[in-house]
Figure 1 (cartoon, rainbow, N blue to C red):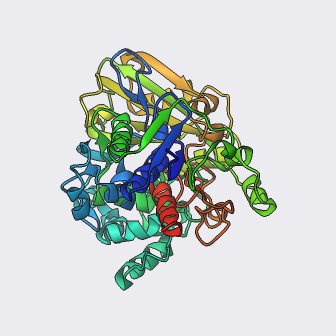
Figure 2 (cartoon, rainbow, N blue to C red):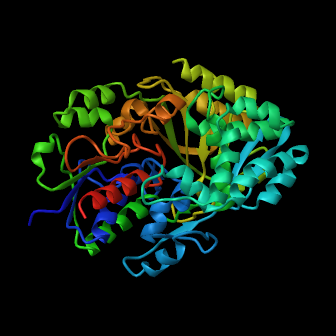
Figure 3 (cartoon, rainbow, N blue to C red):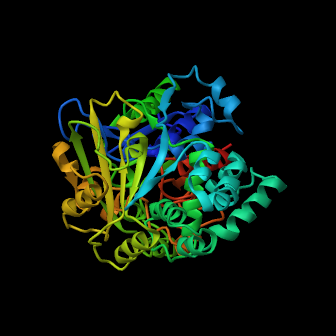
Length: 489
């Protein structure tokens, strides 16, 4: 039977798009080129048998805060309250819910000769640990968290004809934007007075993979930190693949068909009134004959720096100099704001930092089901880099955890090319779906007021190259699917 919709690609956006369309009664066919579904939600035994490692996302803060995942009711946390949660619970009978687990400390930021900065679910406890910068934290990150899911919804999903935010939400967004539009280094110097306050902001902002002297990097940092207080930084018990598998199961329960190992090379292969593509602009260019103006827009699309990723199997926990860091799910390594800013400036200029900012995740802090003490980390590198950064990354860990190398049973390294081979959406190792700077942020591939709609009738783009950008939040897929439903009602 001819499907009503074909979704190409099963990353978070593709999976959310497929389930959203199927939930509306559409006959959906999901096609995935890889042998396993999930894209950025895949897990595998990368080091030793029985050790579960996530190939992409592990920490699910953006998923738990996402209006897309709340609409599906597949991720549940009794502590999260906000628009859509009641309806989500009522849909829990459609497939098993996915359990999320929280570390005692959402994130830690070790510093030389000082106690680590600890970011807790509790904003007041976090602020208290920042001493003289406690008031600044409450006034910035705390204020964004207090604005609730209505603010994160507004920031995550561009406005459409079906959404009208409240006056209070618009006011909160204006206050957030006044600081968020600035460079992280500017906010660090003007708002925070201590080494600790500035460092923790820089560690959050560096998730943007931008030069921290660039506009809007403060916004990335403030929003990410706020989610720690609003929904926490949880992990999926058993690995991120569990979430991907649950979404595929939900799709099949709704009558959809999911096929892995099927690569779509041309849109001419597909026969459906709606086609939703979880692919990058580069892939779309090779798949379709596009109008010249739109083709030029895709050809101008800019990809950001890549990452070099390491996974380890350890014989015990990381021997952090500050024992409090052991309880953290995420650890930001790089030292002071000035050190992190220098590292990210080097990468933005196309160079490898000798002392890179390192984002490290220790899943065992919250999830003992992954086969032991597994660990992963990455550092930012120029797009397409072939440089092995193992020594530099491990040196940054040893800096704050002397004896770390002695705990290693096995390691697995992935260059930018290795990452792209596993997931073609990671062009040059870019895990964010494109350069996240201000210029491209406001003009992602746009053909109409709804940037998920392409000029090809019935064809929609939903990857992280569309708003709101990278992250395991599924909002791009959700928006593209809702737009398709709106157009074909």
